[in-house]
Length: 242
Image 1 (spheres, rainbow, N blue to C red):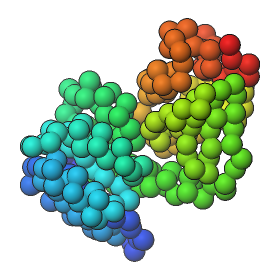
Image 2: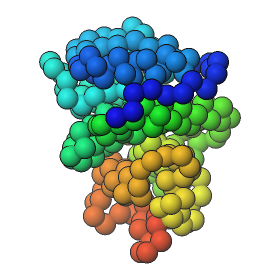
Image 3: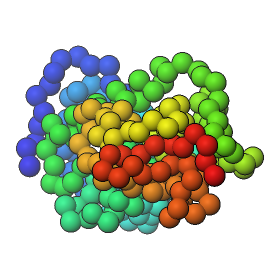
């Protein structure tokens, strides 16, 4: 594991919360983020992480999934109930199931241990760039198809008058699809435009989020009427569901 990142000069860093119970990893990550101009706070267990996530108002959380008291998945779940702060997971190399669950709960990206500081810093910067782009998007009128209504201004989704709880990425996916009904989007296009061209994941991430989205908006997720699969290509939202 490389131990340092070459400092790239003065930076306007954001506030980062590191949630990790291994002191040597904490110091490695903290050192490299501080060198890059970030403001860093640390929580060594899940309970402390939930408290600091509220008190410190971080712009990004680096979250290890193996934590004492409250595990990382539960921390992710509870943070996501109250906040859309980006979450970058730290997982073991063989922890694929944990990564999948974490992404389903609303985490934005992951890094597997052992990792290199340059990769970690690059992913932090990529997530923060995407967050900044989303914050600059102008307010827009609600989008509606059938009984499904998405309001970009309030960041709410209603289905037949009932409020639907979506993660940030599920909301972004649905907003893109609703904004272009009947248009077919490839998985690569969705990955690039929702997660960003510098995202390190795979198109499986898209499939997983589409599946979770269907569970929330479809009467029968196995026979979807809103988001349909175009075999060999990708996905589209039907203009006239039914």
